[in-house]
Length: 198
Image 1 (tube, rainbow, N blue to C red):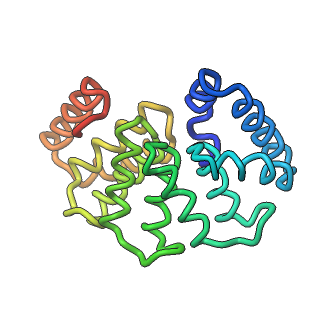
Image 2 (image 1 turned 90 degrees about the vertical axis):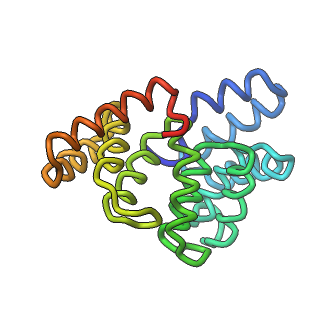
């Protein structure tokens, strides 16, 4: 799943109950982006982003990160991701975590990456949950913890993330049956809490 379309259904709902002009412009920008017409996407997203629309801000971040219709610029991508992420946009939170993890446009910082991944994971973003599994499995930004890694992989796998399924099975080979059971219990508890405080 591409990071631009991570939360399209949620964004569409938010836009539909908001300003109809914003909705039409956003949808026009999104359609243009999907068809590869990045100039039109940029023309539609930029004014919305400048007016504080988190979805448009995230999408501009993607365009700057990938150099689609603009010169590739990680620092500008980071700026747009941060603006959207601070408004609670889960896709932008994931993208910001990814930038910190990779050191793109910012000094690499695993701890900060984990923080942003966690915000997105708590909103149910499977890619962020998988990324947290990786961070716990490798001890990047957090102490290495196979139980937590398994838990996060399991949560993402339950949403159909194939990488999470494979990684969960790999980490399970390093765990005792008791630890696997504990990780499964943590995952069930996390789902019951709607991914909060996991």
